[in-house]
Length: 194
Image (cartoon, rainbow, N blue to C red; front, side):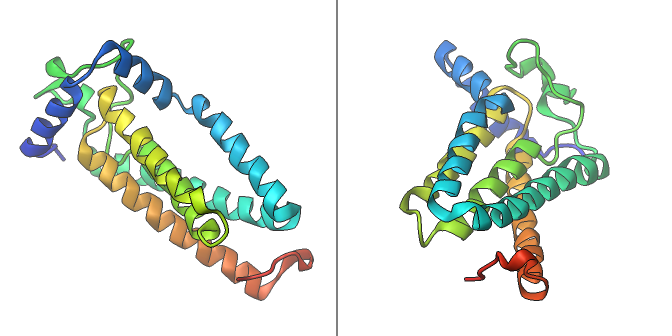
């Protein structure tokens, strides 16, 4: 499947608006290991605020959501849809602004960065929204983190939007699984369903 012409034009518009500072920022942000301080903070905060029993169950659900989002994006959609990344799209690849020679793999729909970041933000939001006022800020991180994939030249806007949809679906499935376990098994008597 080839990208739509309007999508190529929108990508080129967004990708061409950059500075040395934005290039440095988005290159840093798009590198997954650089999000680990955020993850460590969130996990540490969770154990401090909610205790280890609830945190273990929460992490199990979060792990399911992230795993599903990544597998659905990378192992199902990318080979099934077979759509090139902008950096591999013959129609526009010469115009794409990439960083440090990074072009990603050949296929781009859907973005795994977008699916997993949305899964993280939404899972935390749905589980914490009544207890942690600032949890909605994770959506800002997910949007900027996802946009970094456009900035570095490896995803169309549709790849990002599709990734977000996959992330939402993965979270809904993960929550159903965790609630099923809570209702049916309640391992070790740990789970208090809200």
